[in-house]
Image 1 (cartoon, protein in one colour):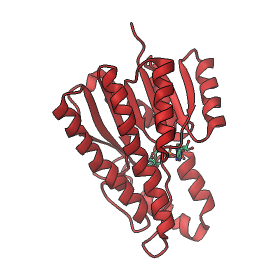
Image 2 (cartoon, helix red, strand yellow; image 1 turned 45 degrees about the vertical axis):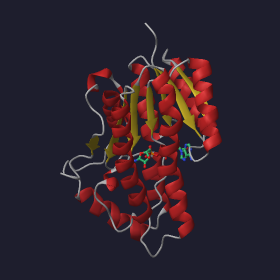
Image 3 (cartoon, rainbow, N blue to C red; image 1 turned 90 degrees about the vertical axis):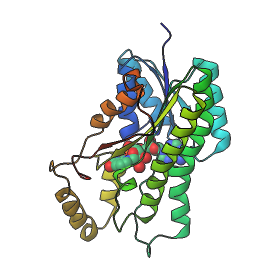
Length: 254
Ligand code: NAI
């Protein structure tokens, strides 16, 4: 049987790495696409040590030329693309007052342009492979918001609605590609833990306490709790599912 192939952006860390592990364990070849090439290669080595099939490709998701090259590499080396997880993202917070236009543009470039380019260059290869599944990683902040999340919310809301637009286009063209969005709540990844460590205690401590109080299950999530969820829209078991949003947040948005 032909081995299916998944490309995961931001696959070197956090949710992307957990998705890569879950998909590799499900039998796919996983391509970890990241700007952090050393971390991506270390993750590939770890997957190989578990007899799982993986490779790494350097990719800055904001760069159109990088995307063309990465997809060419996947087609040349793997021959196909079945699953695309547009996961790479940055989580820079800030209010309207504290967010500069530069920061706003940086967040939009990675979180929105990166997903747009991934779909633009990944979906044609999926079509040539006979169809596939795209999972765009948005956030609970693509559904609800927070005063500290002006740029981030704007970016994740855009991912949510862009996902539906592209899903409708694929369905209308009957190209066999399904496109869904994933909306994680607070997950203890390097993005979240690193931001907390960098923030002044007088801001982060009340913010963390307030946030935790908003999670009905009373705890933050772990990356592997997302990896297992991503494996479902990536699989044929979800074949009637497109344009949907999957929320995994311990009840935060309930
Ligand atoms: P993380 O910081 O652990 O991992 C993000 C990965 O993306 C890193 O490997 C990083 O090198 C890569 N990356 C960043 N910019 C890139 C670029 N321009 N091109 C290619 N790769 C790039 O973060 P985490 O938490 O795993 O986040 C993954 C996704 O999940 C993001 O889109 C984030 O917004 C989203 N998310 C995370 C939540 C959380 O609580 N951790 C909650 C909701 C959504």
